[in-house]
Image (tube, rainbow, N blue to C red):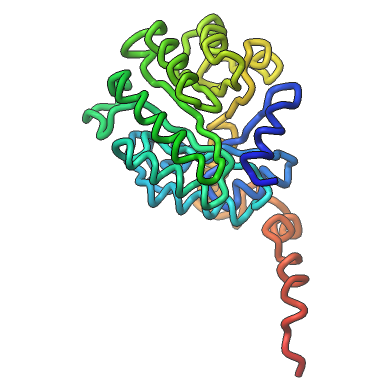
Length: 287
């Protein structure tokens, strides 16, 4: 059973899928070791790790794809949903993006309807026309037939065009054959429920922490709103940043390590020094 089929089967199971957001080999390896079967290759996390900046459409397809290969190499059994952004161009670029992730072993790929290149401001999320958005998802679904990769269709038009237009786009994406649907920037639970209804029984995905920054819902609460997949993009990234800051503060204070640092043995075990020695043993040249 390939990765898309395994994700399809997992989505048939009861309950919401909690999907950690990952960005490199170590984050993917840790998520897998913690027992998570899936992970979201998050554009915002990749932007943070590779550029040291926010997710404002500056990360290229090549950088995202390289990050996917790191994630997949470190955790090959993890079902990865890859952030394909806007497909990096027109409908033909979308097809290239979808085919590349499918051939590389991703379980699903996200395609959104934001305008690219974006205006030179961090505010708002202007989107392409409804007809152009339809053609991008149509192209993605057609390209996905090669590998079976699932297509997650995302609309970002809620902040600029309103909830009615966003719901209409979700309905349109269902018509075009999208496998998973995503309303970005919902304004509360009622809008989530409208989006779930518009998905007509197909799984709904969301960035859970965006629903209520002051109090993110639990997995059970999100599931009660009808979500099937929820990702938490800052849950691993923010503590990782805090940990690096703590390490730097320790160095500034003249210490060798921060108080929250792992013991040496646990650090080495987590990185897999022992696993390396076991794998390398058959190839050691005897003296």
